[in-house]
Image (tube, rainbow, N blue to C red; front, side, top):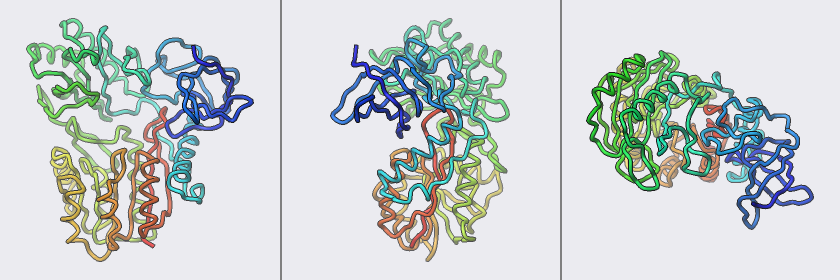
Length: 457
């Protein structure tokens, strides 16, 4: 048993844990599943030179933002046993979540970006129109037992799924059926410790029309009873429009492998965002919260147009299937999307044609390789929109964006820490950070997206 402490939680850290201090001490203790204002008895499970990490043993008094989690798999002081690590903030009221996310952005801008005016630059967090049942994509791991669910925080132990209030009911019902049919057929479930087993993950995409596109992620491509399985699955869930197979042979935590195979039905699923209709293949990127994505894209468009500016060319880097590219297409005579996933670029061209967009074109390849070729065709004034992965912008991309012909940069980020790092570099390279708007695409979690506008000084 670790050291027991009584602590008071002061704030929320960027990773989502509470920042607490032991009573009578300045020692910092990070406590998962705690809320600002909580007074807790905790048990230390990790000690470092400057801080400790501890788990909640007993709630002595609750902070003003604490609520009872809706999900039975969520951690709570009264619930023993491993808790689902899928979402860590169900114990916070939604108002407390929104405030916490703005606080995380401000903290990163101050501490990492060195922006003294971070408070003034950062607006209130835009709330999600749909805080529950919002995810249009889920990847559910399987494991020995048999088990199907999500990993307990910090472990590879699967918490067996009974319900999940952040998923649509359709996804949960389909997942239960797949587990039932797989067990009845004697399929082996993947064991990450031994590297054995066939069925690794279930991948589900759904849309607002109540349709679903499925993929089984397996360790080898052999699937002898696929026709019987597909027929029974479709009979029980007519909402399913297509079934795919993804082969991940490697002993890795990376979910998807490179090999895809369509077993039956649709190649892709369609989704509506605002006035646009998009088709998405199983492995292509699409924001998982469609109503909040519309808010995010509208915020990006507003930032691009701020002050009535209109640029002859806009670059959209990391454009995926072209959702944001098409959303911004009426902001400029020409817009060019850049995306390394070749299948996503094919989807992007089809989406542009489907929506009657004539002024968008797309380049397939890593931004680092494509941008030098695009540099020759930049007009005297242009703008860029970037939506990079969690690691942020690479050095070559940051250097390209410092080209003096770039007059405005709209930065869409899923990681405030890497955004703050990049914004600090850009602020020392001719840009001024003008505004930051947090947007909640992931209710019940600590994840926060943001839209920032940087103008060349």
